[in-house]
Amino acid sequence: MQESNFPTTELFTLQLASRSESIAQLEVLIEEIADKYQVSEDTFANMMTCLCEAVNNAIMHGNKQDPDKKVIVNAEVDNRRIIWTVADEGEGFNPDQIPDPTAPENLESLSGRGVFIIKQLADQCIFNDRGNEIELHFKI
Image 1 (cartoon, rainbow, N blue to C red):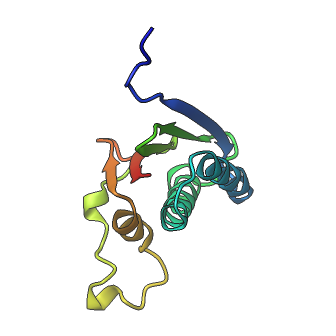
Image 2 (image 1 turned 90 degrees about the horizontal axis):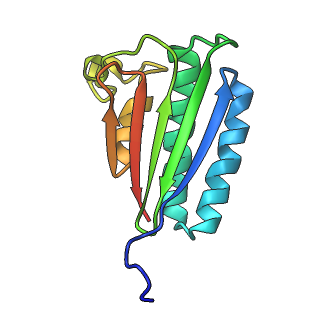
């Protein structure tokens, strides 16, 4: 029997409590996937930065650190790419209404750079219509 040419997809899921300590569980999963799929150091660093930022935003802004609300992280991996999704139970937001952190009036601001950084580092970044889920693509 001939072997299939279709890439095999593997799925990973984490359900995180809305506490900053949950980031440690996320980091372990990112490292596990990066090791298993021999992800380059640059892509690994970009994934770590983007996902930590996305999960932190979900905990802080989406779920407002409510311990009864969860953040769900999924990773769909094949031999060419990793698609991550991070979803919270919050009301969502409009990512198009985030002030540009590179605008002169925002340069001194201590917050508001996370989504900008995510968009710069991920190969693709998609928000759902409600604004409580982000999908991040990374080529491997």
